[in-house]
Amino acid sequence: MALPFELQVGLRYTRAGRGGRRNRFISFISGVSILGIALGVAALIIVLSVMNGFQKEVRDRMLNVISHVELLSYSGEALTDWRATAAQARRNPEVVAAAPFIAAQSLIARGDDYRGAIVRGIDPAEEAKVTGLGAQLKDGVLKRLQPGAWGIVLGSELARQLGVGEGDKITLVAPGGQVTPAGISPRLKTFTVVGTFTAGHYEYDSGLAMIQIDDAAKLYRTEGPTGVQLRLRDVNEARRVGAELAQSLGPQILVRDWTRSNANWFDAVQVEKRMMSIILTLIVAVAAFNLVSTLVMTVTDKQSDIAILRTLGASPRSIMGIFIVQGALSGVIGTLSGVGLGLLVACNIDVIVPFIEHLLNVSFLPGSIYVISQMPSDPQRGDIIPIALISLALAFLATLYPSWRASRVQPAEALRYE
Image 1 (tube, rainbow, N blue to C red):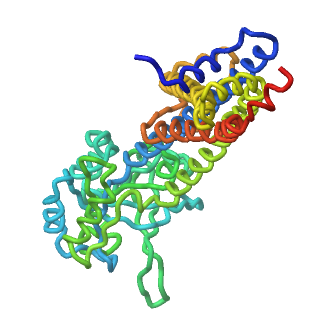
Image 2: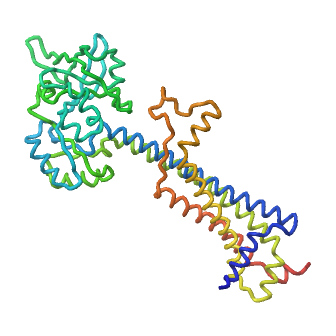
Image 3: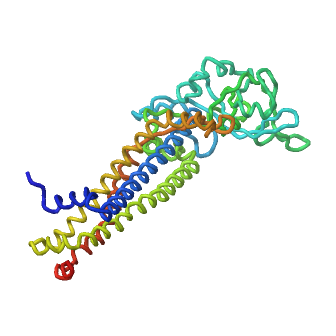
């Protein structure tokens, strides 16, 4: 089956580079344009994959500590019947586990050293069902949290800042106070450090402490749990499930999913990712519009060929199609090459980065500074497909003006000095 006329000539012009010095120069410029598109597309895929990897790594460490969805009372007081609330939430097929909790901001004191922290009252057995950290520590330090023993588990960084270890005493200052004849005095309680945990996320390692839920109820003077934590089958469905639970549980229950609890962080990541996409897309755009100069030179060099084709009956639309094919083919080659190169690097970045670090004797992510010591990568179809489509669209747009200019060539003028 014969190829269309425009495609045949366009492919021939794309391969042209052996005729003379000028043809070789045009072919070189075309190759540079294709290389620029490929490198731009590859850079965009690699950067977004690394950003996705960082986001996934931080998200996983965050969700190792917090639950997917929290159910709270709007008044901030204890839930009337947390078991009934949990049972009603479990009717949603996405909810796989529920556990009660009490959370409050408090001061933790060791001598004259004070640190603010979120103190979470938990049931160690139930906590293991809803958080990864609870499951990891279930048979370890959380087992030491016994009702009435007034034990506390601190984040490793918080314990380091206070200079305490297992067996040491700390004083917990609860919010509010108690009225005495001398005025309002703070409510203080001495706890024994029964262990520490490392979540791998600085915010929680430096600002979270866990105590037994019955002790928390006595300390904060609540009649029971102030909330219920839920674990879902699919963490990415948290926002949808949260909306469904808000409707089914009624207006007296506040439903808060993990994306809303950490909205500022995720919004910042999305803005950063969007800005990086725009900046790197400009690189692809510059490389794509280099095709304009390539095609303009080709049109100038092929004016006599265009004139002959016109005298043989080729229409201006056919002439325009020839150069659109030539430019678009360069865009396709550059885009596909860039996608292949980007995926190759992104999927093997865990091998490439250590090799470069060993070769240069440097560490890009020192463990003493960053929580993540290895470069993560997570190529996603939702990023790669738009990148390829944008690159192809820019390459196509770059062909329009030179192709239109070629279609305007007048045979008589082009052949006058031939």
